[in-house]
Amino acid sequence: MSIKRNDLAGKFIVIEGIDGSGLSTQASRVSEILNGMGHQTYKTKEPSDGPVGGLLRLALTHRIDISPGTFALLFAADRLDHLENEIIPKLSSGINVISDRYCFSNFAYQGTDIDTQWLVEINSHCMIPDITIFLDVDPTVCKRRIEPRMREEYFEKLPRLRMIRESFLKVIRLFNEEQGANIAIVNGNNPIEDVTHDILEKVLKLF
Image (tube, rainbow, N blue to C red; front, side, top):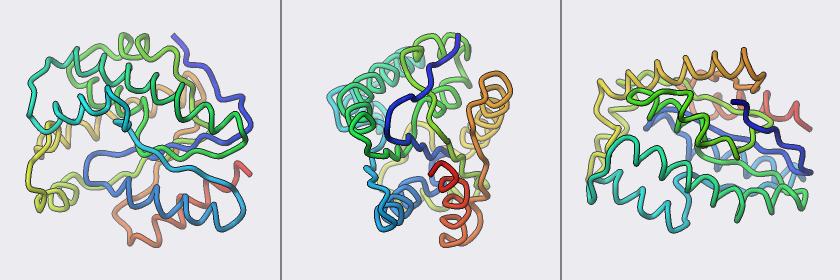
């Protein structure tokens, strides 16, 4: 099942990667630079700050226990709420949106346990971003970045991070080849400034 494309006034930009790959840092940097260039841009994230997003954060930090299928359904529900109440209104008014994670995280993370086609089906009301940037970072580097946190999250064990990276690469090939999803891979092992430059080089082609 295909996912619809963004036909709204604003550009929809997504930054993806495994935990610890620097998504929040790069989303903030790119958003700030685009705003400075006159491209009005709004930064957001998933899980969202909505009610379902709050429930997901409880599950991710092991404060409630849910099954992989329930995880997938909650992520899809949070995404639909996020789109309808935050992303689409911004895009419709001509504001660009950068999201730290989106449906491709759902496909890659839950896709290690669940059939990808079902994940695509439950996300069928989403839209494909104008561009998705996948920050490809060595899982051992990501694990080292994560370690100072007080609580290890659900997907942050090293073998799991390696598995999720491979899952991401499969998802990228699938969506680029079958749906022309415009997912670009950026080497996230480079210095922060270089990674930002590489992302902007791809994103600015939208404008």
